[in-house]
Amino acid sequence: MNDYFILEDNVRNTFMSVVWAHKIQEKQADILSNKYKRYEVARIICSSLTSAGLISLIFVDEFWVKLGSALLSFLSAFISMFFKSFELQNNIQNHKKTAVELLILRDKFKVLLIEIMHANNNIEELLIKYTDLQNLLWDVYKNAPNTTDKAVKMAHEALNVKKDNNFTEDKIDINLPKSLQRGRLKNDESKKI
Image (cartoon, rainbow, N blue to C red; front, side, top):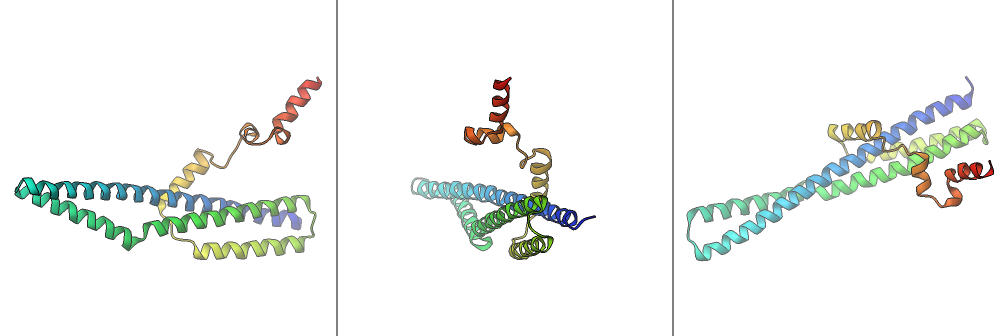
């Protein structure tokens, strides 16, 4: 086996682990965002119902209204404390930040693969680039927030079932100007015939 192939094989494996880590961090941020939205809606509803219950006490002096208002007030306070104690929004931001850092590294590993395949640089220079990227990746992993099994399952479905990272030529062409579209080449060829 030649040195370029060995390096390419290792970079490909690292690239794939970065793809997975990025998608897992992304899905964990989605999970926490959805949880935050549900809690925020529950808190708003509880606060509104508490206010309505307290206002109704002016007109009605029923025990169940007092009890319901107290319970809703407790629930609203509990949700507010939950937000503060678990720093849900900070966790969401940390997962998103890590996902972006991994996305940047993913693209850098992709560029390194191109350089390896073209063999423009000598193997020592490419190995240094790979080592530098690995060090950056380890820093990201070291500072990455923890994820859940649910995020891993969602990432698996996104990558393997829904094929989130796979794009057809047509999908790519739609988002490019005509001069950069590959479909343009097919159309140009058919016009010549």
